[in-house]
Length: 112
Image (cartoon, rainbow, N blue to C red; front, top):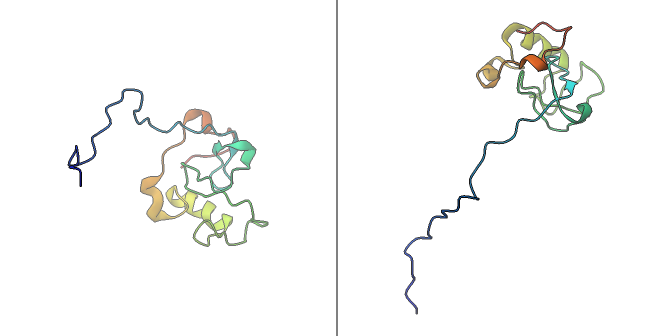
């Protein structure tokens, strides 16, 4: 049996293969929960999570009072109430939210 050249695989040291931070997704539609312009693809962004309130886009909801499979069973009405009170769809998720960027604030919404 031939002896292995390396005891462990060598590390790649290639300047063209560097990890980069993910590009920020540019929203063009309002989030149904917080109203910030954070949702890409004209609002048709299945499983996209709003970085401001953490509402996960659920294209299969037909009513604001229908429990969302994507959002811990919350209705959109409940999520909006939670966002108004604590700034996230659920209070325990507030630490993972970020404030909206100035260009994401729609003129008709109040930001928490």
